[in-house]
Length: 380
Image 1 (cartoon, one colour):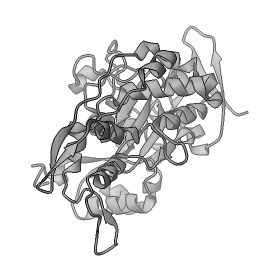
Image 2: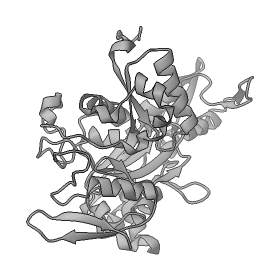
Image 3: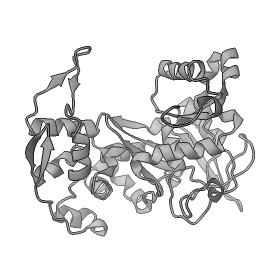
């Protein structure tokens, strides 16, 4: 509170919840906020949902975006998950321990920096001089496919590319040469595949294979990058090249080739490393009482903390402009009514999606031909 110049007692605290957050940690965070900081209300919301809230697909509507495909590439890990009307579809979650930390470790080896370990846990300290983060942001990039491959698999994204020259960096008061090849190889960790052949591109395509066709329809047009890893120069360009190559070369992805004709990337006005934070600010403005836990309610019923995963329902709003969001920053489904209201206009019924996500099973999606089409989920 002292650093932010705010009084915790007067503020709603929004918690961006990791999709795999342990319940014990969630309870500990809640206890600290209520008991130590005396905050009045807490609102938990999944990080992917917040990322979608802060995104923009085309800028043709003032309504907030509520559906999209989130690719979060952070320090330790990368995960991919679709979000439909604010509900993360957990059965399509794909995860891999691929992140910026691996790039730091590669640089530490390349620059021959001796390994250091913590005294308490004997865990290796990556980036002992705290300079790799700046080096990666300023110098590293992601190489595109070779011109021959780019022309064969994705001519629509083909462009001339020249490998940047070498540069000098200072690490621990020692000047080091940072070759152009090494600058590009660092980013290759995300797309070259690990020992199991897993890369960010395969995570995305495998997640698509787990989705129902109508879920893909409502998310493929708003692919959102989050996390500092996606800030690398050429990241989005190589990602599109890589997935188009895979759907052409690998048989298990052949049926996704038609899906990629609808692929569009978010044109958010927010930087990708702040995408979830920006969505959290929006959530703080639109979250209703049903989306919040007060200190009194938690004291009387501590078990309520286990139920908040079911609360991610985007409440009705007038327009994005009323929230102070820049013009053209958001587009999506607009709807009204309570939490039992189905979303019309070709989108999925919110409660049905929520129930299906919690059940973890598969569903048969049917489209009813009406003046206002509604997609319905029925059991097999």
